Image 1 (cartoon, protein in one colour):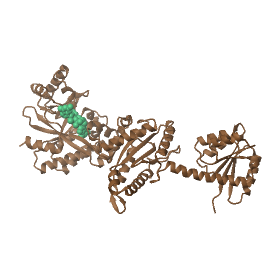
Image 2: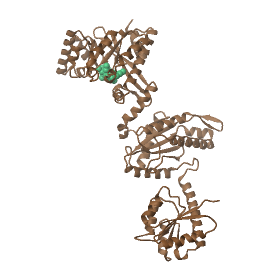
Image 3: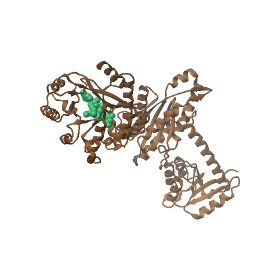
Image 4: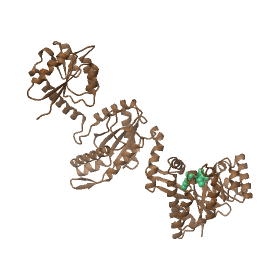
Length: 580
Ligand code: C2E
Ligand code: CA
Ligand code: CA
């Protein structure tokens, strides 16, 4: 039994509806149902609604204030593909022609309406719709993968741009190219290449369909699209990225999916993709710009070694959303062990002997290379993961220390930077103590570098003496970092048992020419001497700076003039040579 054919009549005269209904009920071959709306507005509402499942629509030419042609135009503009038959009072060739021009399937005179004419008109309308669909499919879909082709993709992208102009949402365009496709195609044959492209399309679809917060169909009816542009080039449109890092979630999901094997004709192979991403509106306002920039980004991904994804460079999006992406990456960095520690010696200015070394964290970002602490420590604080970051660094330092002991490398104490938010945490002391005990590291080998902000943090300032004494009693020394940049440095020296102060690099930088900075450094040196605190001057880069400080009897220095921060293997070599 075939399905009921659903008809809609748009007609302001109820009598005409009754007649139509009666004619329809007399048609034999199939079963029909007919609905009726009587106004222009109601017709628009019903026809453009998502639930419209009418098979054929009949439009009366005379619709009160409007005529059926106007309605026809509006319906077509709104993208309806339901076949429409225009009904008129008397035969009017002019109207007929205009109806056809505006996309009507057929034109009928009401007075000539009978069962046979109507049955035939409906049958023809349905057949025509079917062949139109077929033509549409051929024109807008890729025959090999059944994915939308370039034309449809561009159309969808355009629709998405128009609809997002009114909202604050972003769109992401991915331009994807299969790495080394030509080699597979040339060596294994075109048939194999075709099968490979089919597998690629399946995997891409899978990555988009996995429903999560990233790629739901949005409220305005837009859906994410995977398309094949041609050859081994694919594109993806993400229509509603609520969070800017979402597009990298999808890119990474795709990469993970492609880490899995592909089996074609019993052959197992692994392929990779290069992906370029452009974000609307940051990387372009038009379909052409977005596609072009995603393509450029894809080329950058290729150039930087393939099997990776890249955002369009110089993108203001990239800058604006840098933090969001970094946040996402930083959380992963902890899981993936991407934090590394470098070490920079602090030396005796007269003997150049290494007194201790400062541990400086580095982030080995899988895509962006080494990222310096100034770029992510703040972020870690702001997103509340500084404790975890600190734990990771502490653990790495302990492992390095233990390794040096075991390999017979000469040992010097290590200073560890503690940020104010870490120091706030009452658990910190216990954590450090446990770590040292676990790794059998003497407490005398550890110095913590804190800043004035640590000391004056509202959460701990009343207990600061007690907290500092915990460390001191346990044998850990305290160094006051970035000295001189705060506002109450002297008070700190007065109230707390500080072992070292480090004069900030901003004073050393222009020490030769800047008389004020000279005066400040002189004063600090004198004061520290009286209080019996060791001073380390940071940021010595030149011989002149070194000589000036030597003359002023500054005993300890740190800076590129002596050593740059070095990776673990490098510092081991330095220690072996320097200390015998
Ligand atoms: P800081 O504690 O003042 O560290 C000294 C910084 O000066 C280091 O930068 C070091 O590489 C740099 N430096 C040393 N000598 C010279 C020199 O001669 N010339 C110049 N131009 N720079 C020199 P880095 O490693 O980028 O660290 C920056 C800051 O990040 C540190 O400043 C510290 O506040 C923070 N940091 C570093 N590692 C850690 C860590 O493990 N935990 C926490 N919480 N913060 C850290
Ligand atoms: Ca420091
Ligand atoms: Ca410093």
